[in-house]
Structure formats: structure tokens, C-alpha cells
Image (cartoon, one colour):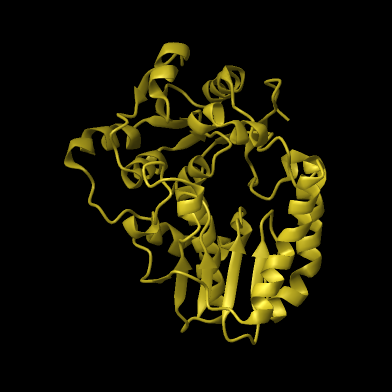
Length: 323
């Protein structure tokens, strides 16, 4: 069995499942994947998106479990791996906690893989085969390097199960037949939740206006398709200087990700949800603009080298400058 301890909402779940699916296809194609969603109740409510979001997509059948059936050594090691980060934060060294634990996780990987544990909270590290009976994945795995080799499969897996809403056909045609630009403006918990505010940068108007300026230099007559968890704020505070369409706010997450990924170009926030919108796009010539600072506290000193970034992206720093 290949176990995954699921953490976070849709964007996070996409990263985690894609990583496990790629590993399975590479080494254990005949084994079953089992997902443990029990942590989601601790992280938040169903209304806030802390649910099994994978069930709404064409993901291969998987088993759900209430707990992971690891051996005593695996459980002990997973507990041990959490200690350095927790200790450094406890003594007030959170600015270096992620960097230290990132190096520690990479250093420990040969031993972890040998006993069937694939633990990587931050960044990318290559995983290897194991002789362990049960394999346990625990982490964020926020890098396409974990699953780029099965990207075609990913595009199929992360297609919504629900058919295209007939009321959206006109919108989809407009997106397909224009120089559409998906803009995702993340506010919500980034603005309201004190813990989130201490971790994440908030992409402000300066960032988006610079990104819009760059887009207009590169393509003619852009159509901005705007998505946000606070559309009211966007309408009252942002002027795109060009034709813009706003999400209704009534769509399911599956329908929303389909709309977003149909766009030809992207201005994303530091959000895994908007990251996946651009990754699922089938436009090989897409322009992707992203903030150069993904988090305030990062596992690498140079935030622009975080593993979540992809080649050819245009990045804008917090001063509104291209880097």
C-alpha cells in the first residue's frame, strides 16, 4: 500500500496526489493508493474547503483510511522529522526554521526512502525505490519536478467529473477565441487570518498593475478573466484598463479551475490554486507572471529560487520590478 497523509485544500491536494501517483507509476504500478484525510478536520471546516476535493476530478480510484498503517519505525521517524522545525519555532527562530528543516529533510532522505518514508515539507528532493512493504508520503511536495514526467496523465486526472455547464459555453468560447488572461487575486484568509498574514505576502495593486502592463506589451487586446475570493473588493479597487470578465462566485472549485485553465495566459498570486490553473493550461506558449516572493519566511534565502517556480515565468518583486 502507498499511503498519503493529505494536507490542505485543493491546490495542496493536487500537488500531493500528483507526487504519489507519479511515484506509483514509476515503481509500484500494481499497488493501491490510500489517502488519509483525517488532518483536514483539524485544519479547518468543510465550508472553508478542507474536504476531499480529489473526488470531484477524474482521479483513479483510491482508498480512504482513518489512519496510516505504518510500522513502528516509520511512525517514530515521522514524529522525529517534525521535531527540529517545532523546536526552532518554539524558541523564536522561525526565520531560519524552514531553511534548517529543508536541509535536514534532504539529508535524511536516503534513510527515509530505505524504510519507506517520503517526508518533504519544503521544496523538491528526488525520491528513490524502496523494499518497504508500506510506503508513507508526508509533505507538501510543491514542485512540478515531482510529477512532470506524467504531465499528460495529470491533465486527464485533474479534469472535473462534472460536465461543462451549458450556461458557461458562451464564456468558454470567448476565452478560447481571445487573448485571454486569467488573473487570480488572493485575499480572504491572507488578509483576515493573522497566522496566514505572518507567513504569506499579499500581492497588492502594485504587483497586479505591473503584471498587466507587461501583458499589454506582449499581447494585443487582452481579455482579463478575473478570479478572486473577494470579487467585491476587486471590482471596487482595481481598474484593468481593458475588457474584463469577473467570476460569478457561485461556481464549484472544479468548475472554477476548468474556467481558469482554459485561459491562454496567467497572472497568478502566491497561491497553489492559481499555480495549478496555469499548470493545467494546454497552451504551450502561455505567459505566466508570478510574484517573486512566495512566502515571507522561505526555505531558501533567495525566494526566487523556490522549487515551486517554473522556467520561463516572469517574476515581479514587492517593489513592482521585474527580476
